[in-house]
Amino acid sequence: MLKRLFNLTISMAVGAGDWLLDSVRRRSGSEHSKCMVLAYHAVSPAERWRFARQMDVLLRMAKPISADARSLPAGGGRFAAITFDDGLENIIGNALPELEKRSIPSVLFIVTDALGRERTWEHLGGDDTRNEMIMSEEQLRGLPSELVTIGSHTSTHALLPKIDDTQLSRELLNSRLKLETMLNREIKLFSFPYGAFSDSVIEACRDSGYGRVFTALPVFAFGEPGEFVTGRVGASPLDWPIEFRLKVAGAYRWLPFAYSLKRTIRSIGRQKAQKPLPFKENKEVA
Image (cartoon, rainbow, N blue to C red; front, side, top):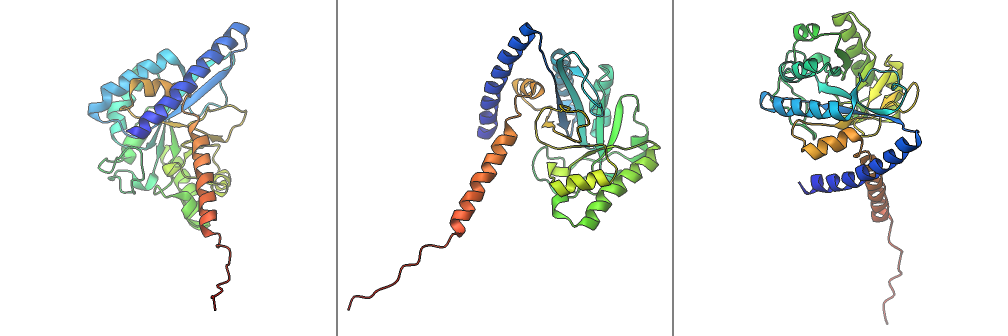
């Protein structure tokens, strides 16, 4: 709770600064386009009304676009895209109907070998969905293609930086080909399980035929033409209203810098701990 409140406080300050800067840009006629991609996992029946309320807020704050957009629309403004990791069954009954009512597109990232089964991978943070079912292959085929785009989330939800090259290629390529065969359409989008990636994993994604990959780093999306690595901010129906608004506004984008600083400090601390102490000759007094 304390960490959540701390993050909220810093994000409120970032959001206030953005509001002032945007006001100046609007007056000068130089408003920029900006977009945040939101990453959900589960939406339970009890959370459906909260999710619906969030989507109403999103429509007031931003223009919804699909996460497979090549670039942001011209003319400036705020945009937002909705994604779901894991392909949980509860998304079909609780999230997609609310999105369809509001004509909001979404992307579902699927763990192909888990279709029709209970979620089995290790919980390493974020929404705890250990008791949730993954949608079946039949349910996946029945999703409305005009509003729902499908992407890959690997074959088994592996922690990609920790596996060897052979397994990595299998997780990336097999999942894409299986989805393409199943749905008879191209699969070009991919999201990293646990948000974990490395430079070599990104290059493996390119080699496996993906056109864009999504991280868990809450930074603005689609800032460059042909962007391959796109950030997302984690979202939940249980977010406080002010949290959700700040996430849509991009005010949590300071977090990657905090993570990087934290890693640097830890690395320096480990180096100091491993540095041998200066040798002192032991001279006994005669």
